[in-house]
Length: 188
Image 1 (cartoon, rainbow, N blue to C red):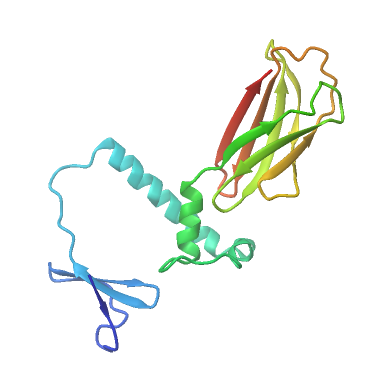
Image 2 (image 1 turned 180 degrees about the vertical axis):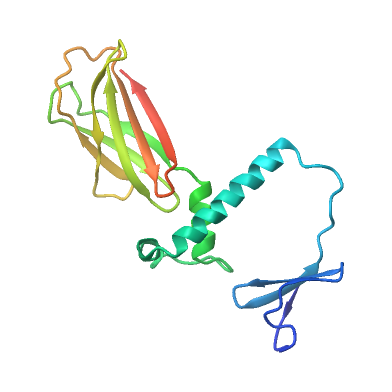
């Protein structure tokens, strides 16, 4: 791999020259490398699925890069070398959020008690939804959690009295900006 510097003829060039050299643009640099060898064997189903996922991520990134709200959300973030908004949006699409913890220490089944959810994503969690289901599978209550003092902390205030906590399932679902979800379920 080589970088082209101070060459007006090659600066800004991209594509393949003959069957030997490939020129591409990365940031303000023109990178020259050997052309990739074409594989004769067909791609596996897993490779095709991964290729489709990246194509979907690129479509998402192109659409979101034009959105002023997205531009504002990413404005203060540091860019990695040779990575800009498009690269961050692809990474955001490919990494779903995770719910790491559900803190139920202050919960005794009464209304007005707080349940704390710790949820993370590489570029921010858009929202957290909490649902409570009894031992028979009947929904007790559900609703959105409010952002807490920390960017990873979310708070849900209970509204229903639950007389029997045994078998109660509490599920927290985090959603990121591309719309992917991560879940954590705790059964009492």
